[in-house]
Length: 145
Image 1 (cartoon, helix red, strand yellow):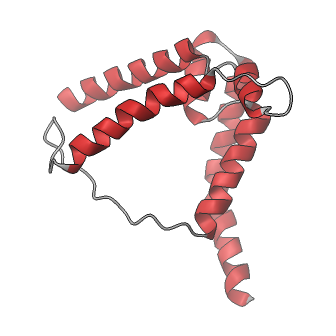
Image 2: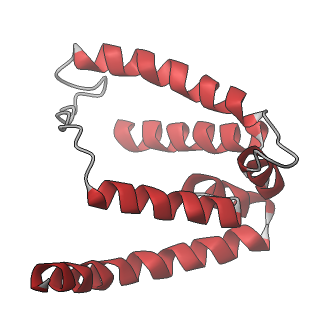
Image 3: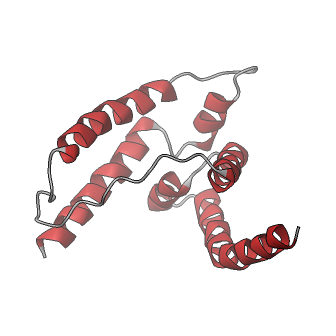
């Protein structure tokens, strides 16, 4: 019960932070990405406001074996940059630039009734369903080559 309560609280704080910071405003996000046009640098402060506490949390978590609620902390993985990471990151970035939303802000934007967020969320769900078949096909093609 405590885990569900803290998960809901963390999600609510995260969503509120996305709304307050403007991450659900597609024009602000696209303005951040428009480096050679009408560039909007305000999201740099949002990123800094997220990265600094996370860097501290990672340092604290590295010294612990279990989370505050008693659950085991996942082991850190090797930091390998491979083709899957590069392709996935590129697709994520392209989608973020085209739509001006990524999954978290898309969910948060549903709270104020934005149709763009709902359309993005539906497209994201279709992509999640189609991804395993696409990955299997790509793996077959690359193994045959």
